[in-house]
Amino acid sequence: MKLGLGLYRHMLTPDNFRFARQAGATHIVAHWVDYWGQDKIPSTDGQHNWGVTNNQGRLWTYEELRDLKAAVNAAGLELAAIENLDPAHWYDILLDGPKRERQMEDIKTIIRRMGKAGIPTLGYCFSLVGVWGHVQGPYARGGAESVGFLGPDGPKETPIPNGQVWNMTYDPNAPAGSVPPVTTEEIWRRLEGFLKEMVPVAEEAGVRLAAHPDDPPMPALRGIARLVHRPELFQRLLDVYPSYYNALEFCQGTTAEMAGGDVYEAIDKYTRQGNIAYVHFRNVRGKVPKYHEVFLDEGDVDFVRAMGIYIKNNFDGVIIPDHTPRMTCDAPWHAGMAYALGYMRALVQALESGKA
Image (tube, rainbow, N blue to C red; front, top):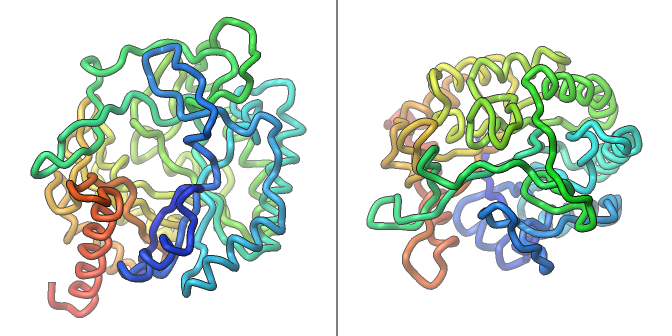
């Protein structure tokens, strides 16, 4: 079991690498997408647009990947994964648009460059909608600010405007209108085409493709069907192309939010099968259509039991705190992550020593 910390692009700094080491992490999961770009486009649907994606679709170079890994290693850490692709890299793969074939070649290039740089995993979420509908509020213990999904009491669902995927604008000059509805059969067809062409490249490059489930795990959002919104659908994704390199970015919090599923059974099944590349460790209260994210030790999931399953099944991948409530202090994010990492480290040590 390896503990890691996820850092967004603007947080990939020597100080935050030192913070990760001080809090007990040995690995970094890096987000290279600039979710909060400097140029913001006003929201058209009442939701916050994360930003303007890299409109030119400039690919990450081998040198950039190599240098990021070297910076992480210089701090005494390992780079476990790059998490998420920039929407500009693959919007027409998701939309099945005219640039799909070119963008498929671009993703293959990224995977090959990651392999050359020695970065073992690419996390991704095959979704047009992305993370949508979350609200912030004092949902965790002591009124700590956290994230919730309120279903019918939350933001009103509206179609995705043309020129957007993943709440990010890849084409600010797109014609007026919206993305047409997508059925379950169609979204699975698109994913299957992606995996059948991409996994062989990942195998050659030595880079695992790790799929994140849909968050929020609703059957559909904004007129678009979702893929993995129940635990058994992880297996459907894995069965598209059985391979060590077709794997899961197993989000335990999202899995716990899923309707009709047992999170402990899911952890047990996919760790025994060896399908999990790395884990998002997060606790929640409730399930769709209403839930709140909370501190690790106060949600619906028994984290002693959950961590015990990973250890029993000899899971040797990286586990990171996903989201965490922000604590009331001068460094809300850092305090929340330090609390989570300390809790996780103590839990692993106690369980591995047989004292818990």
